[in-house]
Image (cartoon, rainbow, N blue to C red; front, side, top):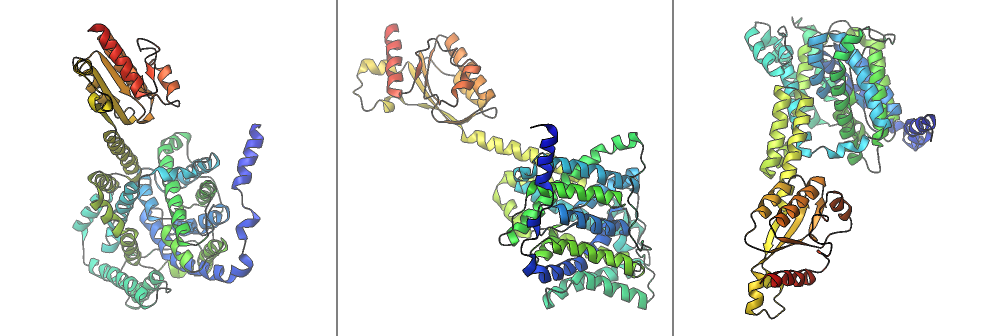
Length: 555
């Protein structure tokens, strides 16, 4: 196929289709109601995440509208709701601190392009290779960072410079003044309302009710607390951020981090949505394509990077959504808020949004899964704690990279430990024969070793060391039929074993070479290292008989 035809095929696989709206005729009322419900829930979260990330409430609202609409149309999940999330604020805060808010728009576009490419080349299923302790670890870390980021708003103090949430929170404690009590009272009120309302009726938008109550109280009592401030009453005109090439090169690392997070969180959220809804199946590659376009569009309109939002997606499913009309409706509801209620939104106290995000952070953590991992094995617990700790102290992407690397090393170590090189008793192997004293003498000069499991780079050196210490024997029989995994390092180590033994005058016989392993053994010279091509056997009895003949010749 020519490059244009390949690109056409990839795009056809990723673009919207008529089947996206199958069943709409019977579900449209439920979809519209679910969309309105999610829009109401998403409003305070979009404002709060915009403020927390440092780009402002307006940017959070724009992101929820633009990214939510584009991802709803182009994404690979019919139920996924996209917008600003807490995980993304953790990545964006250092970008704002170092390069300003304008850099966030550029990073959204650059990261979006990368995610589009990931979707087109078919990397959507790579999410399955991220270990669960890593996922749970960075979720706990993100939740902790989100809660720490709320400290300046909860105390109503100026936010100190810095991009380490823990250090900033500690520094805020030294800035407490008389206005702190009022702000904390609003935070406590919001938290209590968000805890009580769901107990009364789960369908009520607890976060919106809490924010409205805090705003009304602040207005009626004329409280002197920080507010969101003016936000636009319409969407801005799309435009490219004005940045020089050198700055864009500097932001490439941040764009890769944003792309990685957008891909991971969106695919996780879509997977959760499938688990909650019967019969729903998302397309991971198309989901990445849609999320990438959503980030590009968000950046063009002055929004922040977006991902699939697990909490809002869960609300969408529970509200009865069946098609992507619900996610599109959610974006249109938020657009109406911008067009009709921007003056009211501007009066919302920042402390109220802090309370919403503190509760959101607590609810992000699946406590049962976390405790289950801590009680499982020391290796799994170590990966979980390490990932969470690095997320809190450093940054999310570094935590995921180190978490995956450590998990891989620990998994390989466990895999290597399950592999074995065991010397077998030749007398037991020949118990069906009558072994006289002369044959017993021959057996003492023959060593039989069985290799089990995996002969790969994680275990090869250990096997090599054990065989190098073989005692006073004349023939070594290596039983290879128990090997299930063989890589280049293992094949090379086996060749070294054979050459070393042959150079010491010990004849090596190989038994049970699997056909699928033979090309690799030939490539690395294992078979060529044998003293004779006849030293390759399929039967253990034949190998033992041949070994006896070798030893008998030297007696």
